[in-house]
Length: 113
Length: 117
Image (cartoon, rainbow over all chains, first blue to last red; front, side, top):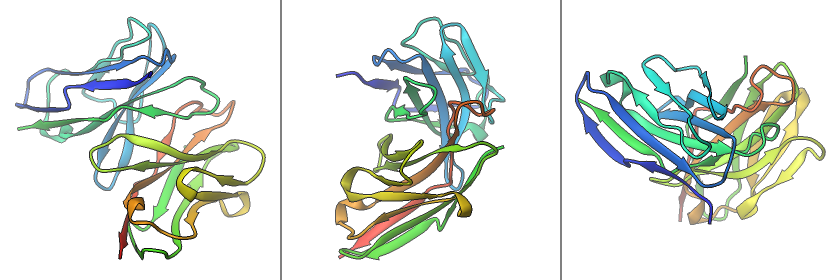
């Protein structure tokens, strides 16, 4: 079955370190998204991509970057981790832009000490 | 800009009672509307969606929602709650074709549903 996987599922890091969260999907979807989930804020969009070599900033993109070198992967990098980036991160993908239905990974819980 | 407001961060019902989770949205173009459910330590799963056509939408697990344009609402209901419905529910909006937020979802803050015996 097609799926979307995230790794690591849990990570603890220190302030200032670079961290990369991996996202791999086997749906062959063109569209991929990274959201962060925080209590009281729901899910907020960090970055998204509509295809290979395409990346776009979402509403909370400061301190984060992504790259899209192939269809399957959209890694999220925190260049210099801050305590405010402690959160649960979800990767999602979609096939058709015009319906917006997303398929989510199980999340990566990041703690920045 | 789009926005979604879910009224009530926590809703508690008895097993067998009506479930009503409220969602209001704002959008400058005709919206696509979604309800997702999140069980503990899992990602989000689609419950139902409205894109075009019939305004009463039926989803999985007996849930349904009605798009009311005049009220800018998309409330989620289920006639009889089960213990297994306990989860967090998210309402989301996306622009339909031509909107500036085309293809991206904006989520509400979430509503935690508790079902007690």
